[in-house]
Image (cartoon, rainbow, N blue to C red; front, side, top):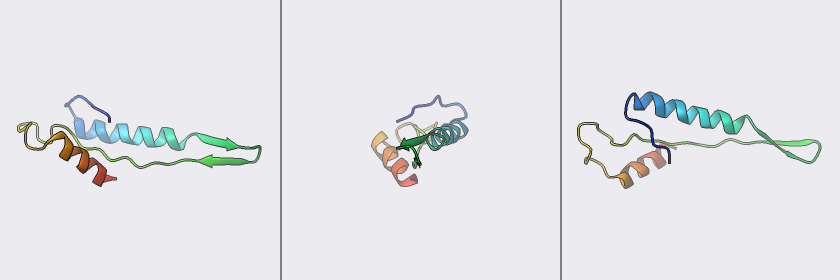
Length: 71
């Protein structure tokens, strides 16, 4: 789980997710002399709190479910 400061959270969350995706896909795993495996992954994220003005609107468990569905 990644926790980011609240300021500009939508932009920061998307940029962090993109950075993780690029880092993972940029590294090939060698299997023997002739075989390279390139990896990918999926990332889902949701801001917490969901609404800045209503911190108690959604529980952390509900936000984790939303991030799972965002995959």
